[in-house]
Figure 1 (cartoon, rainbow, N blue to C red):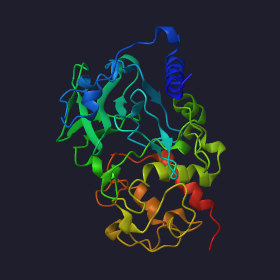
Figure 2: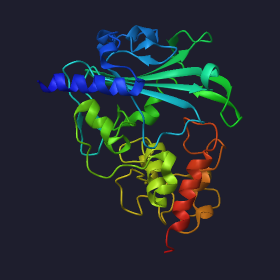
Figure 3: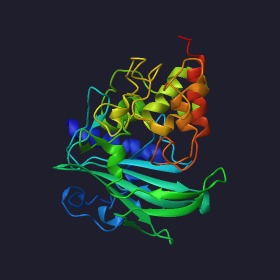
Length: 335
């Protein structure tokens, strides 16, 4: 059996396990590879053929669902994640733990609010790996929940979060996607890191062994992890795509990636470089043992424009995430 065929069969097994169907009954709906790689901007999400049933989010053949151990907070939205790799191509793992997808691949993420019959699809963001790099596009679902249309200019939608908070949800415009996905001037995926995915999923889907560096804890089981592991995983996923060298907030001097082990780079007793009024009355990014004196937590707890962090992607404070960071700082030995 060839390696390519083995990967295909493993991918089919992963799909079957995720959806509870026998491999012999898998759908054979084919992704439109031309729409993924050509320079045009498809107006409708359905033109990619990523889904057998778009409204029900049933993926097409070779479009594999996945979940993150620690997910990005987005006002409590349900996120349905999928990855597509064209036939005959392989995925590798880079030194930083990011999965390296070949040209023709796509990452698909749908944001939804509500449950069961009341679930409402809001947007589907796609990352397309074309010959000249990655392209990020947002697609907005219509009121009838039958189709999603390209929203180059973004959108604002009034909705209620699972906690009952009324918010103005922002669908990012095409250029805003670069603010989170920008690295060294190029768009890059930020979610599918080997350390933030199930080892079993990586092995079954891509016949790969996960990279070293330790897996991030499952967010649902964060209370079973150390305070440091839970908080560092959260900061990596929610903050490090901007706060790292080469990214849009590199001028802050913070590097919040999981693999960073320099306390100063993590903000410990580091004076802010570019916080402005966001620092409030606080002097250091992280003060060991004193979460309420730490700029990092102060900004995470704010909804005020110009103070709140992250700046994009949320309109509410993540109580669980801020509590994880608070516990980490509180348990740090004083310096």
